[in-house]
Image (cartoon, rainbow, N blue to C red; front, side, top):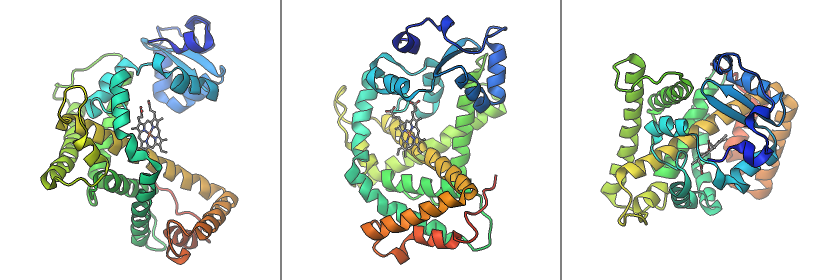
Length: 333
Ligand code: HEM
């Protein structure tokens, strides 16, 4: 792996600006663990490219879009995923696109790409509208809702239906708990100074194993159901199950399909749920921006008459009118 510093800055790490360390990076690690966001802001104060020794690792932070473009696009071939991340995240999603490198990544990426073709995305709009409508219909005026949970419910329903033709209604809390356990475990294990073996019967290790089993049951359930019908619905799951394995001949194993499917399932709903939740939170603080957004949505939907046929039936419209006076529901939790 070529260090970002060699490629972009041409200066050795020692010369890059950043916080100094007194105890082999442990002081920086403790600061980071206490408040990662504050730590990121602190590093950014050193400039567009900064370096910090964090425990045993040297981390490089790039805050300029040109640097990021260089790393992710122009010189992407020179960068690998962090080995510790690969190992830890791999315990959950195996070798799916999110965690793969090099040729393996290229192969996987090519395989899932058609699911994101703009023509397919247009067909996802129907599911998005239906699920948004269902969520709004379930809300009672005057009632307070935990928006983070509501957004998770809707994005999870959308990803399950668009990618796997599956209904996860009623399972949201279990899945979301499993995802939280996995993400917290991954973060803890990536930051850990000492590795604790996963086979130890400690409460956290047992919770991690249970969380992985929740995902195994869920995704292998999708796979079994689809194999049983033998149907090609053209969605991501069918694509994965029917894809030819160029390297070994035949099709992908269930484990390979599981890894890719779980990657898309988890990457595809938690991020969007968080984005939506924070969007509502921010809009509630800036009514003038909210009003502009409402105006734009109404105007664009009326002009395009898409994806809803009549504006009155449009869930976004209903959302807007429900919230016109009192603004966005209060964010809880
Ligand atoms: C607002 C929503 C989203 C945000 C903020 C977000 C953020 C990110 C980020 C930062 C990465 C890079 C991670 C890394 O390489 O370390 C990533 C990768 C990825 N995301 Fe998202 N994502 C979002 C939505 C989605 C959705 C909706 C899907 C799928 C339906 C998805 C699937 C993926 C996949 C498969 C990768 C790995 C891509 C690759 O390495 O080629 N993401 N996402």
